[in-house]
Length: 532
Image 1 (cartoon, rainbow, N blue to C red):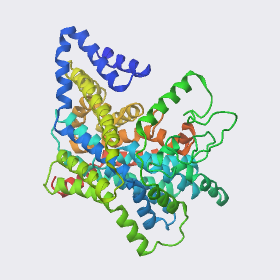
Image 2 (image 1 turned 180 degrees about the horizontal axis):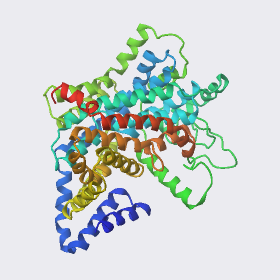
Image 3 (image 1 turned 60 degrees about the vertical axis):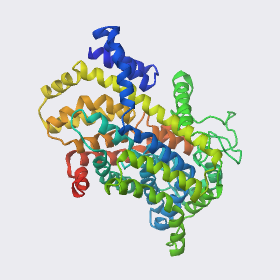
Image 4 (image 1 turned 45 degrees about the horizontal axis):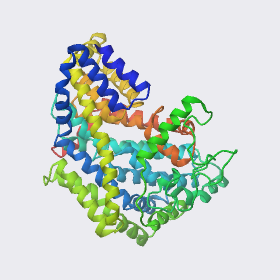
């Protein structure tokens, strides 16, 4: 029975069936095999009940808030503020990248969204300051990992819902528990970037001529890197330069990103390129027209290599421009921990606040833009909720037919050494993160591993943070590595080249993961301190 459930799931994934459909179809095949067609009747009710959860209602609201804040150009303003504060330091551009990602992650709650929003400006700027393109892309992609670790993390919301069957844990506690690990990841990635070798001084100037194409002088800088919404008319090239080139090379067209492998054709490369194009289209929809100067000014600021500290007036100006975005996490977390509203209510408040900022304060959002904004948020939410519904049926099959118990007994029969068991589960999750998103992985592995981890003495908070950080590393791990795909697309380098630059950051992430895994105080300190 386990062979049917997991075997059919892996086969469907291998032939290219989307994860949600793979989980749903393999679960239904197992149910039919065990009990016949009539046993499928309850599945529709199970799927509906999973999506109708009041807790999961926070997901579409947080997505909507993130989309609106992206449209208002807040990412460019956060970069401008971080650069004003830290740009003069040695390695200041790397610190600017990390700090901007740290703050934007607490607004978007999404790794790919963080990379897409910040990469168009920061990757060319990192190249200008001497970083190799593969390291620039890898740093921004790694910084995007914080998007699912820091609150408001959609991954934590899903984990709390799935794990409630074994032990109830509040979303607010998980949100607090993710703050220290998120900061540790930020410090680890900065330390790696700080000691990376820089290119010769003369090579630094090569990025400057491409910055206009990289940012597109448009609202959503990532669009220029995908060859859409580019006011300057530049198309996506294959030159390998940051920001791309508007001139065809080697006789080839310039409308398609390089293949992830970096060379060659064939069916496998074509399939991967098609999948990559689809992914980039999903993550970067058509831009809403808006103010180009916000993005342009921020880009020019970080492209300049600072030698002196910014003046108080510059910092004050940058702070006031970024203030609407900085207030978003304050409102969300302050409202939750001040007892004013629940996490679900905080998501609704965040969406309303973002809408007011866009329409009234910055006035970057026009009434005609609302249809596109709500459509984009709706599509993203529907994609997640469908995965939730299908994965719930998969988890139902795992629980109903004793798969979880069998695997738990199998693991414990091999060894009772707590360290080996936890390391084994970490390895499995790392491998799974190479292919699955966090939401699908939670529905697949929480029923399998949470009982085992509770049995060996881990607390639910540490389990949730460990699994989330583990799966966050999967965002930059080949062969999928969504964050790394997006960053490579923006940097205009082959995916294989970006993979060469990711390993120092991945190693730093592993160190933080081991610290979180074996030192529970890292996750529990802040929630315990605040009595959550």
